[in-house]
Structures are given as C-alpha cells and as structure tokens.
Amino acid sequence: MRNKLTWLSCWIAAATLLGITFAFASQLQQADSDIDAEAKLRELGIELPKPTPSLAIYKKIVIVDNMAYLSGHIPLDEDGQIMTGKVGRDVGIDEAAKAARRCAIGLLATLRGEIGSLNKVKRLVKTTGMVNCTDSETQQPEVINGCSQLIVDIFGEDRGKGARAAVGMASLPRGAICEIEMIFELK
Image 1: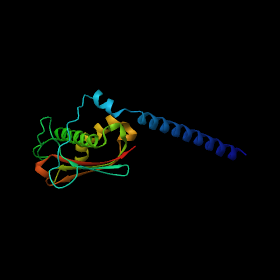
Image 2: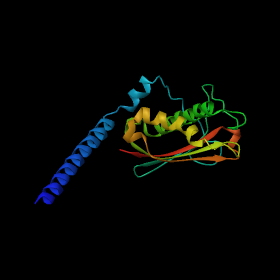
Image 3: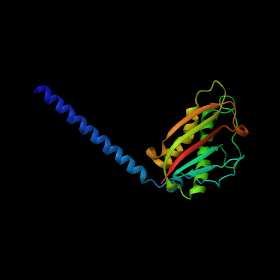
Image 4: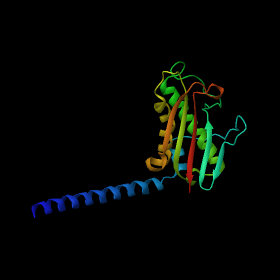
C-alpha cells in the first residue's frame, strides 16, 4: 500500500508540474502574440530604411502561401555603404555583430516593404547567417547574435527565435562582413 501511495504522490506531483509548465508556456505565447512589432521598432528608436534593389538577378523576397523567404542581405551602414571586412583579420566580433544587426534592419525593411506592416508576422522560422572570416575564426554564432537579438527584441522570445545556422565563408559579395537570409511565417 505504501508503494502505491508513493507512486500516486509522484504521479500527482508530476501532473501538477506539467500543468504549471503548460500554463506558463501558454502565457508566454499569449504575451508574445500581443507584441506590436511596429511600436517596438519606435520604442527601440529604429527607423527602417527604404528597401534597396537587389545586386543581381534575384528577388529580395518571395512569398509562398503564408511563408516569406528573404534572400541574403548584406549590412549597409546608416549612409547606405556596405560594411566590409574579414572577421578575425580586419573586423572584431563586436563590430561584426553590429553589421549583423544592420543586416536584420535591411531584412525587416524588405519584409515590411512587401507586406506593409511587421505586425503581419506570425513568427521567425529560420535564419541563415554567413560570416566573412579567416579560416581560424570560430565565433560565427556570436556575430549572427547581432541579428538574432534584434529580432527577439522586436517580436519577443517565442515569435522572434527560430531555427538558425551561423557559418564562416572565405568571402562574401562586395567584401561584406556578413550576409543573412531569413524565413518568416505570416499571419
């Protein structure tokens, strides 16, 4: 009898803990779905630039059903100049992370230019970040965090974190520090 009571007590405790966990996760998801992405941009003091034309023969964004596929964007500074250099030789991790943040701003500008408002974004699905770096550089994830952190700051933890890859490249177009592409699910 004592063994049965112990198992029953454990089962009740586990069920209670699972119930609390599901309730907490549901609250987080509800809180993220209430985020006004356009207001967050203003709160962060970010003004999205006008989307720039593509550098070659491709579309910067393609929407299929409720999925938005954004082509790779390279970082442009506030004056529209390409941020260039090789991480591990010309550029440090902090500067490269700032370049990745600028990529995010360009990606969001393209996305908003196509769909009208970032409030139409349901969630980030995938980020692929490429870093122009020396062959001994291993901090590509820290560089791409510059992009990922901005997306989380705007859309929240649940909607702003997706799957991700951060890889090193021997070179990138126009000597850019990094190039990032993203996939978003739309409402």
